[in-house]
Length: 93
Image 1 (cartoon, rainbow, N blue to C red):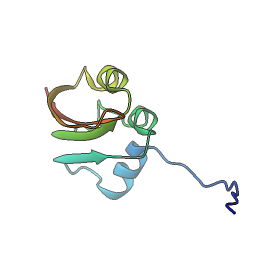
Image 2 (spheres, one colour):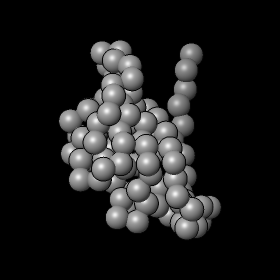
Image 3 (cartoon, rainbow, N blue to C red):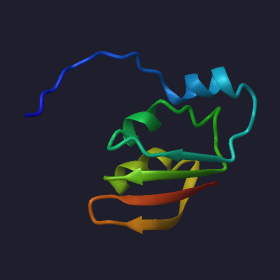
Image 4 (cartoon, helix red, strand yellow):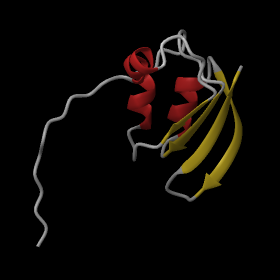
Protein backbone atom coordinates (compact mmCIF):
# COMPACT_ATOMS: atom_id res chain seq x y z
CA UNK A 1 0.00 0.00 0.00
CA UNK A 2 1.43 3.37 -1.04
CA UNK A 3 0.91 6.47 0.97
CA UNK A 4 1.82 10.02 0.14
CA UNK A 5 2.65 13.04 2.17
CA UNK A 6 2.76 16.66 1.08
CA UNK A 7 5.73 18.66 2.30
CA UNK A 8 6.69 22.23 1.58
CA UNK A 9 10.23 23.08 0.61
CA UNK A 10 11.80 26.42 -0.25
CA UNK A 11 12.15 27.17 -3.95
CA UNK A 12 14.81 29.26 -5.65
CA UNK A 13 15.26 30.49 -9.17
CA UNK A 14 18.11 29.30 -11.35
CA UNK A 15 19.44 32.86 -11.49
CA UNK A 16 19.55 33.14 -7.69
CA UNK A 17 21.54 29.89 -7.49
CA UNK A 18 23.93 31.04 -10.20
CA UNK A 19 24.36 34.41 -8.48
CA UNK A 20 25.19 32.70 -5.20
CA UNK A 21 27.45 29.90 -6.40
CA UNK A 22 28.98 31.01 -9.69
CA UNK A 23 29.12 34.79 -9.28
CA UNK A 24 30.52 36.26 -12.50
CA UNK A 25 31.66 32.99 -14.06
CA UNK A 26 30.46 32.03 -17.52
CA UNK A 27 28.43 28.84 -17.81
CA UNK A 28 29.49 26.54 -20.63
CA UNK A 29 26.71 23.95 -20.26
CA UNK A 30 23.43 24.02 -18.37
CA UNK A 31 21.75 20.62 -18.26
CA UNK A 32 18.15 20.78 -17.10
CA UNK A 33 15.96 17.75 -16.34
CA UNK A 34 13.40 18.35 -13.61
CA UNK A 35 10.65 15.94 -14.65
CA UNK A 36 8.27 18.32 -16.36
CA UNK A 37 9.22 21.48 -14.47
CA UNK A 38 11.65 22.71 -17.12
CA UNK A 39 9.51 25.64 -18.39
CA UNK A 40 9.04 26.95 -14.85
CA UNK A 41 12.75 26.51 -14.09
CA UNK A 42 13.69 28.36 -17.28
CA UNK A 43 11.38 31.22 -16.34
CA UNK A 44 13.63 31.68 -13.30
CA UNK A 45 16.73 32.07 -15.47
CA UNK A 46 17.51 35.69 -16.36
CA UNK A 47 18.91 35.17 -19.86
CA UNK A 48 19.97 38.81 -20.10
CA UNK A 49 22.52 38.13 -17.32
CA UNK A 50 23.12 34.38 -17.45
CA UNK A 51 23.60 33.08 -20.96
CA UNK A 52 25.01 29.56 -20.93
CA UNK A 53 26.89 28.67 -24.10
CA UNK A 54 24.88 25.46 -24.36
CA UNK A 55 21.59 24.39 -22.78
CA UNK A 56 20.52 20.75 -22.80
CA UNK A 57 16.91 20.51 -21.67
CA UNK A 58 14.36 17.74 -21.38
CA UNK A 59 11.20 18.95 -23.07
CA UNK A 60 7.73 17.51 -22.73
CA UNK A 61 6.49 20.58 -24.63
CA UNK A 62 9.28 21.49 -27.09
CA UNK A 63 7.35 24.48 -28.47
CA UNK A 64 7.13 26.07 -25.02
CA UNK A 65 10.85 25.51 -24.41
CA UNK A 66 11.53 27.09 -27.80
CA UNK A 67 9.47 30.16 -26.91
CA UNK A 68 11.42 30.60 -23.68
CA UNK A 69 14.86 30.26 -25.27
CA UNK A 70 14.38 31.60 -28.81
CA UNK A 71 15.62 35.16 -28.18
CA UNK A 72 19.01 34.09 -26.86
CA UNK A 73 19.53 30.50 -28.08
CA UNK A 74 18.83 28.40 -31.16
CA UNK A 75 17.91 24.74 -31.36
CA UNK A 76 20.99 22.84 -32.54
CA UNK A 77 19.97 19.21 -32.16
CA UNK A 78 17.25 16.88 -30.94
CA UNK A 79 19.39 14.46 -28.93
CA UNK A 80 16.64 11.97 -28.12
CA UNK A 81 12.97 11.67 -29.00
CA UNK A 82 11.15 9.21 -26.78
CA UNK A 83 7.66 10.29 -27.77
CA UNK A 84 6.70 11.55 -24.33
CA UNK A 85 9.65 13.92 -24.22
CA UNK A 86 12.71 15.04 -26.11
CA UNK A 87 16.19 16.02 -25.03
CA UNK A 88 17.05 19.23 -26.87
CA UNK A 89 20.39 20.97 -27.28
CA UNK A 90 20.35 24.75 -27.67
CA UNK A 91 23.36 26.90 -28.53
CA UNK A 92 23.80 30.56 -27.70
CA UNK A 93 23.04 32.97 -30.56
